[in-house]
Length: 419
Image (tube, helix red, strand yellow):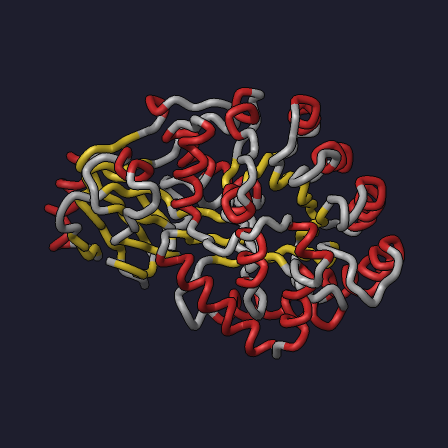
């Protein structure tokens, strides 16, 4: 029988419980427990303890099956971060692309010159599955040390059946083995990322994905999610609509790369019943209204805006429209190579005037909803024991330090990562 653990005291515990699922949030809506602790049993939270309950539990521990883990010094506890949009399964680097952007080249100009997504595709196709697993593990471990306890990971740098499936198998294998402490990895099939050079026609390629890749993904249970990049140079709204309807008919949840450089993707996401629309840098009022009508979760990606030197997505407008804003890193080798979710969210929050509560919600319980996960993102009895603590006395310090204040205590599935 596993031993129960009581951990504390924490100067503050941000439970993220009892908060609105969508729309604006004031910091006064945060449920804060002062000088309390947390009781866990295995990988599950058994109780959130206020100060008197924490003291009583400590006093009883000698005569019960409870181990006390004392937190020395001030600390603020909150749920582990959830990153709902990454591309961290790949080989190679795109530092040349970054240098070209600094010299004034656009994303599309670099792609047309042989850089961009297809340059990563070439390097990823040449890598073995063991190599892909190793690169993925290294990036996943670093994400966990930054406080990310759940991480979505896309394929999309294979663009053929062999490599797309190898990427998804790499994600599944690493997630299943659990030989290393890493975030939970949630896979997404993004075979519809870009048209590979061996196909002349975009329609033919999407038909190939539907015929040769999606059925195998379903057969091997490699992912429950499918994504597509709707953009000039990638896939048009009309082609994407047909493709998404096809994969939805096979039982997959849908996500969409939408409105990064040109509009149209958010409207498609709403029409096909996508779970989330990600990017949204150029979304206007009509696009936002479509997302609201379609109950689509907007996911903004400040990493891409910073990496490309472009405007941020309209996070404030999305919240004010009553939508459940989610913030993700978009960690990828091209447009968002930094990958530090907390840094990116802190910067976006200042530029878009997103409150502390709204930002933390966008990284925890609202992010969990975007991945259809109901067992995390909140510190509450019965939920997963994924949590992080920062060495400070007040939760405002977390975003105030713009991501440079890192967690000094991380618990993943009830197991110690940092203590």
